Length: 410
Image 1 (cartoon, rainbow, N blue to C red):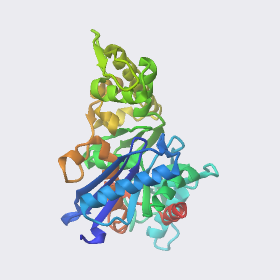
Image 2 (image 1 turned 180 degrees about the horizontal axis):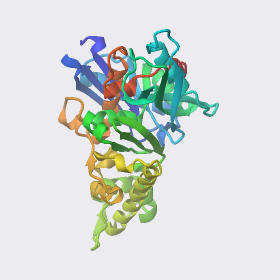
Image 3 (image 1 turned 180 degrees about the vertical axis):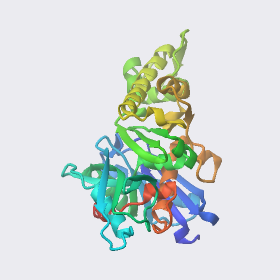
Image 4 (image 1 turned 60 degrees about the vertical axis):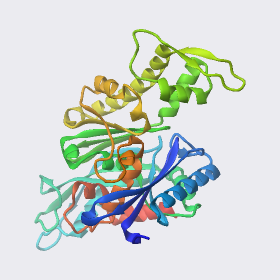
């Protein structure tokens, strides 16, 4: 058995699948993927728990697979959360430096972060992330860490993500009933970005779009820091439902049709697809042209919504590295071309660039969130006294944030 402190597990309780990925921290702080467990999800809709018993069983089964695959005992996990209730905002906080020598200490940094996130949110919400963007000392910007600097006024910009506490607690409660401890949680878009983007991508500016079964999560980086996040309660299951409705076929046949014959590219010449006989159903033929049109309309609508949101926040001109699409829907044929037409930017089908391990795992966009959770865990565990890297800036938060998360986990 391996040392417990070298093993980290990421867990995604998604709409289409429950997935656990086991990572080992190797020499130099690098991460190697050593095990994977995955089962079909039965208790989740639009990224949120709708059947506690089914979801708990799914988590249990995925964890058993992961333990057997990695030959380790799993006791705690880092889990992703999502849902249409998640909201975000950017804010600036300010504190006076009152030390006699005007040196900025950890107390000032902690206080300015608390001040920056002290914005009214709905009573039923809880802050999930208060992510540092940049500091200012007496108006001077571009400061990564102000510790030890001299100044009279310290300011900080942060990106805050918050959501409905009870809806987040349902996922956590299912995990604890397995039983497992939840070391921490992170929004899915943040985790996916940590897996897909390199430091260069983040610095150039990029948007990561994670299209899963029930939600599409996205996150935007500018100049190395997170500027905007969002969740749309639309995913691959909605494409399947559109196919079933449009072609008047059962959901299971619609899903198989999407995977085997579907494309987001519109056809000039129609073809017919023969649906094999199933018990109680007659053979029939469907139009491939119509299939592709139905799929194209749903994905185009989703991507256009994200494009409009990015434009509204005036971030489009800062996306030098382009668009990275990950999650299960990233595999849909024609996705890269459709997204390129919509965004007018370079588009990549994203997979993990930040870990080593089996090619089938790290190059599969379906695993981006769980692999990113392992990266998130690594950043969370680092010494906060060290100069922050780009990953650490994402993970670093004030003590009050951790107290809120711990309260959420109770």
